Image (cartoon, rainbow over all chains, first blue to last red; front, side):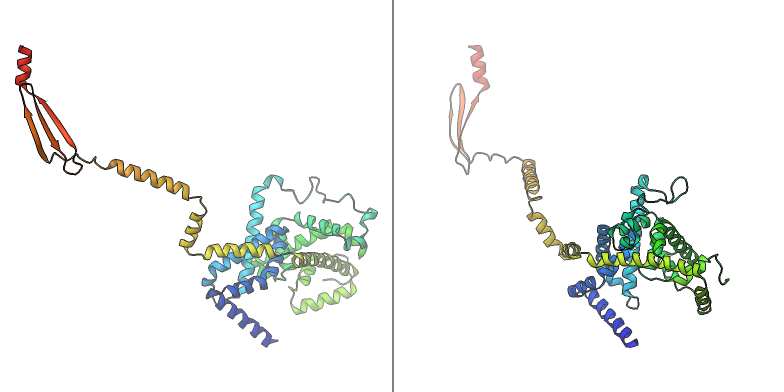
Length: 201
Length: 166
């Protein structure tokens, strides 16, 4: 196991050294190796496919530009991941400013959660929903209704498997804030999707 | 934490799901889960949502075609890596600049030459012949290079006076 880790580390160090020498092949390898993982992070935060591709592209362009100043004792993936998170959050903030007038509240005016009218109809039998694209649409709609910061933190935990401390470090927030945002996001999602899941449990 | 309690400690449950408990707390909550159906149900619900999110995001990443993004990325890098004179030459080659630059050059040339002092006509190189009479003086001269002939006629004051008198 430790051999695998050492080999992986040295592979990464070699890759960084080649990138710093300006090797084009090394850059192609870097893109192939990390684009899917970074895309998952960006997509988890933005929930937008094309924007996530643009974010990943921007991250690689920055890597190409600043690889010379990358410290060899740092972790390459951590650096890439951090840039992806920051780019994704910047995109969310930009969109929030641009479409402020379109922003929908998490709760409806009377304080009740949004409920899909089709809920409980025969077409939405839970067994079918699990394999249905509609379920994905419902899930993503509910995720989009979460406050952006809570969703980003929750997705960093769910998709990237980061610990509370790692998330706090990346986002420069307190560990308690991470914990409470994840708690909130999880609670909201469960409440809003309760009708779809309860019958299966 | 109470066993068989219907009041779920959501904060503890979240920490348990996120692997944020220490080993003693884990052991306690594991024991509690064996005896509390409400907490088990809660864990299952969260687990279903969690796995559905993960599955959908991973599927999206697997089904994404990165080809066009790679193309845009490497095009951008190629553009960035070209030396400035090649980029300039390519830019000039597109014709976007060629016509305005040519026009500008023509304007500058016209301006430059218009600011030059007019070439002075050189004086006559030699007096070829001179004729003097009662009414006028006539001189015939030649310029040095072009060999142009200039005929200079000068009416004398005395003649004018004579004419007026006459």
